[in-house]
Length: 139
Image (cartoon, rainbow, N blue to C red; front, side, top):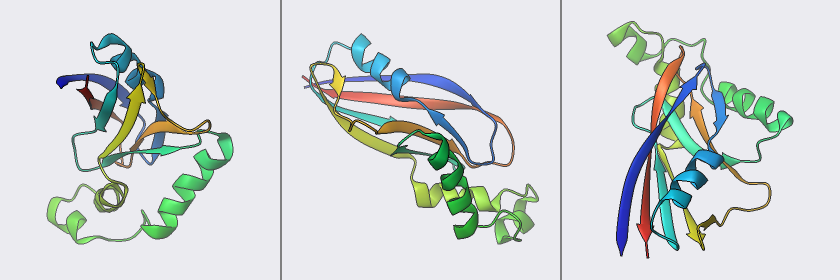
């Protein structure tokens, strides 16, 4: 078993900005010495998440609307009263989403579905430069 850990950066706009990072993850797998295994994709921080979605215009509108219904951005949160940064909603959304996603690969190809892309979602209330950690494990 081999393990390879690398990272790349992504600039975001915040406010449920959805970025397709599938190609960057695939590039990390391609450049590793590992041909079969699992890749863990993780975003450090408490206001962003990683998941999969069909990266198409309708869902790119539906997803932020869904999150706004679940965790409204115009509500007062206790976090906001503590830190006065107005991003309590983004912490809650990120905790629901989760900070990581794992996908198997074989022959250096991610085993994603036809319409499945890996996305980073930045829920914060400002633009950010996000670090994405990619840990590849396998043979």
